[in-house]
Structures are given as C-alpha cells and as structure tokens.
Length: 447
Ligand SMILES: Cc1cc2nc3c(=O)[nH]c(=O)nc-3n(C[C@H](O)[C@H](O)[C@H](O)COP(=O)(O)OP(=O)(O)OC[C@H]3O[C@@H](n4cnc5c(N)ncnc54)[C@H](O)[C@@H]3O)c2cc1C
Image 1 (spheres, rainbow, N blue to C red):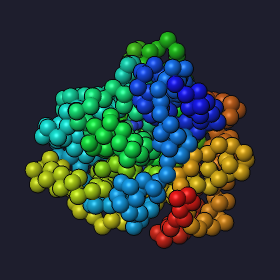
Image 2: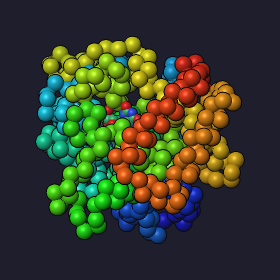
Image 3: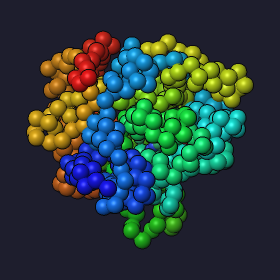
C-alpha cells in the first residue's frame, strides 16, 4: 500500500486531467479499487489497501507518457513522420462481409481483423468496448471469445469508457487482442516495456483514430432537447447506425426513435467535449499495431456504404492485412503513406499543435496538464490565435448558461446551424491550420 500513489491519483483526478481509462485500477492487483461512473465519465476509486506500483506515474495518460522514449523502446527509433507515427502499410478499404461492414463505424476492418485473429487461434479472447452493457445508455469493456460477440461490439463508442481496468482480470498464459484509444495503447506499451506480466498477454493492440469524445451528460442533453422525458427509458443507443457515416440513433421504451446524422450531432462537441480529447497529442493511435479511421474524402463519401483508412504499424500486421485481402475478407487498396493524414489534416492539427497549445495554456494558468515528452518545433502566431478562439468556445460551451441555451434550441435548428458554422470555421481556419503541418517537426523536451 502506498499513500503517495493514492495522493498522486487523487491529484490527477482533482486537477481535471484524468482520462478515465481505468489503468490505475487495472494495475491494482489487490482488486480492491474500482471505477465509478460520473457525469464526466468513469473515475477511479482507489482502495487504501491498494497494490498499485510506482510505475503508474510513467504510464498515466493524465500525468505523463514519454512518447519519444516509448518510440525508441517499442520501435527502436523515432517515426519519420510525427503526425501519424510509424507506418508499415497504409490502405483504404473495407470488410467484404456486407453485414459486418454495414453494422460497423466505417468499413468494419477492426471487427474483421479481430474475428480473424480469434478464428485463426492467434488469440484466446478479444477485449472490446461495446455500447449497451450493462444497460442501453452505458458502454463497457468486455472480454469475448466468439466472433458473434466481437461483431456485436462493432461501432465506435464516443463517450469515455474505462477499458484498462480489465488488466487485472487477464490470465497469464492466455493471449489477447484489445481495442483501445491512443493513450491507452501507449500506456500498455509502457507496461510491456517494463515487463508487466498481464500487459504482455496482450498480443495485438487495435484501435481507432481518435479525435473527440463527449461526456455521457451529452446523451442526457440530446434526449432532453428532443423532448424525451426521464420516465421514457432508452432501450437502444447506437452511435453510428445506418448508412456510413451513420447517425446517432436512440430508441425509447415508448417507441420514440431519435436519429441525428453524425455531422449534426457533432454540435454536442463544444458543450461536452472531454478534457482527454483536448489534451491528447495522439490522433492516429501511434502505438496500436493497427489503427483505423474513417476514410473522409469526397470519393468515398459519395459512395456511402463505409470506407476506412487503415494503418499497419509493423510487418506482422501488414502481412495479416495482405493475407485477409487475398482471402477476400478485406478489400484493401494500398495508398501512399501521406494518405494516413491527408484525409484528417484538421483533426491531426487539433491534436499535434492544438493540444500542445491547450496544455501549455493550462500550465501558464497554473493548472495541471499531461506531459508527452515532446513539443512542436514551430507554431506560428496565427495558429495560436486560432487555438484561442477554439478554446474560448470550449470553455464557454461547458458553462451552465451556454448549456441552457443549447437546451432551449430544437435539434432541427442547432444541428444544421452548428454544421454550417463548423464548415465555415473550417474554411476560414483551414489555411492557418494546415500551414506548416506537412513539415511538422518536434523537439524532444525530456530524455
Ligand atoms: C472516441 C472516438 C473518436 C473517434 N474520432 C475519429 C475521428 O476524429 N476521425 C476518424 O476518422 N475516426 C475517428 N474514430 C474512429 C472511427 O469512428 C472508427 O472507429 C474507425 O474508423 C474504425 O472503424 P471500423 O468500421 O473498422 O470499426 P468497427 O468494425 O466498427 O469496430 C470498432 C471497434 O472499436 C472498438 N471501440 C469502439 N469504441 C471504442 C472506445 N471508445 N474505446 C476502445 N475501443 C472502442 C470496439 O470494440 C470495436 O471492436 C473515433 C473513434 C472513437 C471511439
């Protein structure tokens, strides 16, 4: 038991940088700590008799993860491109099984690869995140041992889910694949680097490109602005239902069906965006073996159905993808490595420069911010100004007054209005946000 560790975790939570990933709880071999749901996502409750090792200090994403060190240790070198991380192969494509593709977030590639790993007995179980467990409005991490269960966990979950608290339930000797968000993947790699027995059972890390997530309170607000009363229970919630890019779909006990296209329900972001989304500098899941995002381009968007951008980070994963392509499980087209970021320039800038500016601003204001061990080599004055506008919107959006205004506006107005404003802002800020991005370089701040 260490009181210091308890204080350390308490400070991360109190100072507002806890990402709710559940790692500290997962590292507590005593099994006495647990995660508790709050309106801001899951938060740890650490037992006084915990057995969390000191190592937590160097893998807690709310405190510090030294990316440069991890690069050296895991890949043996720094990436050629710090925007997307190490790349072995880049593809665009989808899973050829229509059912999987249609039920998935983009092209169903994550689901298909997990199913293949299980079917070929490369893993004993998959650890996935699924909406609807333990109840329709909640999402949880689950360990599954069948392809049907993997398929049932398709689709992105855009609220924070404590995923790594499952760590202390892993059985040494068994082999697992896990889907997790970027800093969670990096945290697992830190543990593996230190020989953590259970983390070493994770043989494959798969994960989404990750832009923004929203607090669970957003669901409550979405229901309220659509006139759903508290007594009308939600019986189903899907974040990416229907034809790609999909819509948020909520069905209630009384039979009400709410559907909001993805581009419209983005209006919830300024009001409910998580601190974890604002502080992370990793968009492309740099320490996952396989990272997958939506293939945002007019060519694919006009076709609907679902297309992914697929990034393999090592030869073993590339060989697996090529094999699945040859077998006809995946339809993949090899792309130049720039494709890993060219469809996502806006969000990559949001993380690689935006998060750094936001974290530095927090520090300047005397607040805590996590340290990732590097910083952008250059950031222009205009880019900092653009960030000040964005951050002001996020700060204001989370105030009671602005949430009240949101509550009073019907979704059919705020959805298209927000989308319109978002597109205009994107156009105005595009030049500044893209400027210098392709020549992005970093300075290692701590060896
Ligand atoms: C919070 C979040 C933000 C995202 N932001 C972007 C973005 O800005 N741009 C972009 O291109 N793509 C983004 N994505 C990724 C995108 O939504 C798809 O997940 C990705 O394209 C993979 O699609 P797929 O069809 O292959 O996945 P599917 O076949 O549908 O499988 C999804 C898998 O991801 C896992 N999963 C879902 N949610 C989570 C979660 N919260 N934590 C851990 N595992 C999870 C599930 O277990 C499932 O196995 C985001 C995803 C998330 C979860």
